[in-house]
Each structure stands twice: as C-alpha cells, then as structure tokens.
Length: 168
Image (cartoon, rainbow, N blue to C red; front, side, top):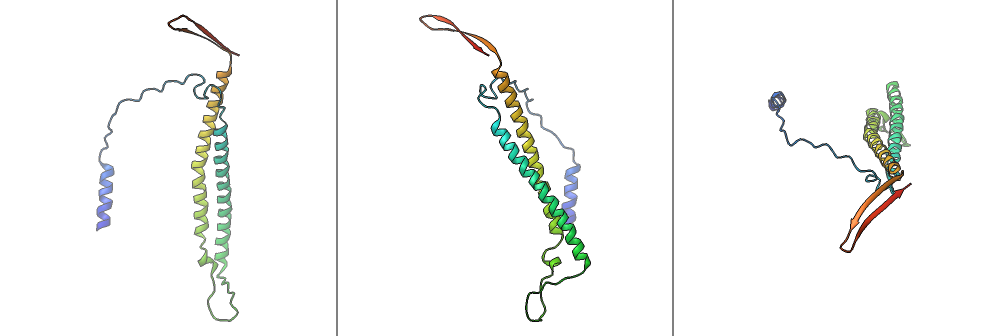
C-alpha cells in the first residue's frame, strides 16, 4: 500500500503543469579583446593541451579495459554454462571447495565493463572541452602577436604626448 501511494504521488507530481520562473534575461557576453584570453600572448594553451591529453588517454584506457572485461565476462559465462567445476586444494577428500561461478559471478564482469565505459564518457567530454579552449587560446595568442599599431595619448601637469606601440 505504501509503495502504491509513493508511486501515485510521483506520477501526480510529474503530471502537474510545470511553471518556470523568468529571471532577468542573460546579457550576451561581450567579446574578449585580442590578447585577453592568452594574457597578451604569453600563454599558448600548453596546460589545456596537457590536461586534455591526460584525460583523453585515461578515457581510452578505460574503454580498452572495459572491452577486455566484456570479453572476459563472455568467456566466463561460457565456462559457467559448461558445467560446475569445483576447485579443491585440500589434501583430504572432505567436501567443500570453491565454485568459480559462485565465487566470481559473470555479471560482475559486465558491470565492470559498463562502469569503465560510463566513466570514460565524462573524461572524453572534458578532454574535448580542454582541447577547444586550447585552440581558442592559441588563436588569441596568434592574433595578439600579429602586427598592430597603437597610438595612446597621455598628459600630466607638466606636459603631454603620445605613445606609439608597434608590434610586428
């Protein structure tokens, strides 16, 4: 009775009309100035590339491990379907022993493969995001290093002038 009440209340909660609260609209992000992302050309995205390689390599390793676990689990299921084999290391002929199909059930291999693949997905997404950021930083650094002519006026109480900056 309690389970039915909980299930009915969950279904009722999902069927009720949902209302969204409108907050202030998001302002479009102002584009960054050239050189701001790469800190005036000093950063070239090396940290992002290194972390992206690390995350992607870990994800590939988890996918490979999951594949090996899936193959082993299938072989273990085939072994268990052949018949019961009891491993007995005792010298006397008393009963007992270890049944490998009970001690290490085949579904554990499938669970291991699924968990490995499941954990590899966020690692791949994170690696891809880091590679995309590294690309943006490198493009920004390249744009900053290209030729640019800047004239900045200045003045003080004693005088004034202009500063000419020419990067090439």
